Length: 327
Ligand SMILES: NC(=O)c1ccc[n+]([C@@H]2O[C@H](COP(=O)([O-])OP(=O)(O)OC[C@H]3O[C@@H](n4cnc5c(N)ncnc54)[C@H](OP(=O)(O)O)[C@@H]3O)[C@@H](O)[C@H]2O)c1
Image (cartoon, rainbow, N blue to C red; front, side):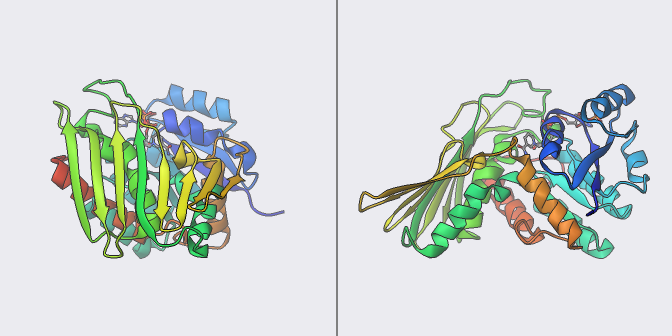
């Protein structure tokens, strides 16, 4: 029988609960250990997901030799130090998006992964959906011709709490890093590094961007419009527009279960990809494949993409006037 990878989760909050729920669809991995600053919370989470171990400090979990992979699920400003700590302990890391607050941090993290020869991947879960694989195949097939425009958005109406993660700059507040990274990632995945960026943000009194628009311009003649918001519920559309037609990742595009191709000729083709679980299973399956193959980074979500994402986000934030102390 193939190995079952023991996953240790640090920061059992909202997203950790969603991630832990996908293990029933990935038999090659199990929730093995939980670490929280609060022992009671760790114990409760361990009980809910059947983990054998729980720890009241993150470092204790890293000292457990049975942990094969650490999933970091804390707010963004903690990703940097925690990832470095995991790598120093030789633990492979799957870290929630964004990998860190800025390019400077992401560079140090990817350098450390290389130095320690240890797996590191940013948890950009949208990358692994069958609908995204299909979209890339369709683009490659030339069915929509040359890409001229891309639109992707991700906005929701969040609780305007100046102390909370969404608004508090000390917790990495702001739309761009919370949800803007998704449409930005989509544009970078499809079109690559832009030749020019124009960005504009609305700011809250805390300094967090509540809505950010960015236009990415390409010498190929393509333009991407990306929108993120923590004050309004956007359509969550993902459209790629070519000279012969459009590819639509059906709403919400970032975890789409259907791809539609609408050609200028009037022909419409739909491809359905119903999820078994909540969608996190695709990302976990890919991480397991990487670990089984002894890979130190994932071909589908390589360090170069995390570096490009951080570089692009830095520029969007610079133009939008969004700054963290860590910048
Ligand atoms: N992939 C996705 O779809 C998705 C969705 C939502 C969020 N995310 C990402 O996941 C990360 C966590 O988001 P979340 O909404 O799950 O966060 P959260 O519930 O607010 O916090 C997660 C955990 O981080 C620790 N933490 C929280 N505030 C802290 C503080 N002030 N100082 C130190 N530790 C703190 C806590 O762990 P303890 O138990 O140790 O106290 C908490 O349980 C973010 O980077 C976010 O971008 C991803």
